[in-house]
Amino acid sequence: DADVTQTPRNRITKTGKRIMLECSQTKGHDRMYWYRQDPGLGLRLIYYSFDVKDINKGEISDGYSVSRQAQAKFSLSLESAIPNQTALYFCATSDRGTSNTGELFFGEGSRLTVL
Amino acid sequence: KNQVEQSPQSLIILEGKNCTLQCNYTVSPFSNLRWYKQDTGRGPVSLTIMTFSENTKSNGRYTATLDADTKQSSLHITASQLSDSASYICVVSKASGGSYIPTFGRGTSLIVHP
Image (tube, rainbow over all chains, first blue to last red; front, side, top):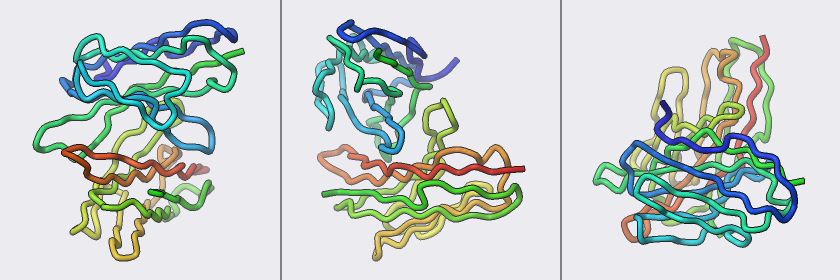
């Protein structure tokens, strides 16, 4: 089983619909992240959380919200999806420990298409 | 603005050949530099990490170099294999308040043909 699991892996929806992408991890890491990847643009940070009570905006948070339900779970919501939110979304985790060097561990990605 | 620039944007080589990917950065203060490999449809996976004092690090057929003075890194792939076809992402992190703030390059797409 994957250490960082994202659901769904693929989703097609219509403009205006509410969408939730879920992420769960078994790595025991405190820190979780949501990234968006678009062709030619690389990975961009949407939101990140350093523990259950900590939520921080990334560089492109507009139109998105997140919930850290538990240490192992971090979900991303699109309240009213629009076509330019069509992208590949990645959840990632990292460790806060003394050996931490900032390595990110990514899920397999959730491909979202908004029609 | 902290930036990470990668070149080339894409590269096609024949199986068995060597290639070198480049990464230039302006991230400051520098903490570490990682190269990630991202297979199509998968999440990125770390290949190497380099800190300020390191100038070469190998992981099998992958060798990364770092010149902290010129703020340049390269990833050299030796004797390429079909499985090397992927996107290679350079990520430079700076340390801030006990955390690492990564800046991602846009990646180099490598295609290895038989």
